[in-house]
Image 1: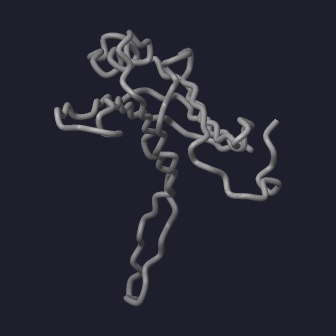
Image 2: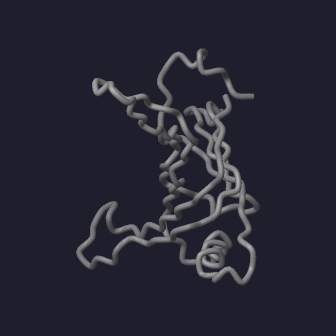
Length: 157
């Protein structure tokens, strides 16, 4: 069971995390970076007639940013890549098969600190890094970026 946030006693580190995507397993889930864990409340500005000194900000819907997963490109066949290719290039001949995604922030001992659960995720963009004959160091690694849309997320401690 995860420790509550008030018992940590130190800031969490961002490099210890684990990702699971629906039914996929093993090497498909080795990601080097996760971004896009963000929600925002949309607002509408209402101007009051006769009063030009301020506007009223009215809350609206919750908007979620896309979840972006990055990993080193794998030379072997990948079920996750196949799902992305089938979804993005499917021309809607078959229904999209959304998957739930879980991202866990871990402490340095591998214990779960926070869990984010993303509901009904599906790929909307697949990208690979540029080919560059002069690349060196970290830029020489081919990176595969998978961008997922989802309906909502929740955070649990």
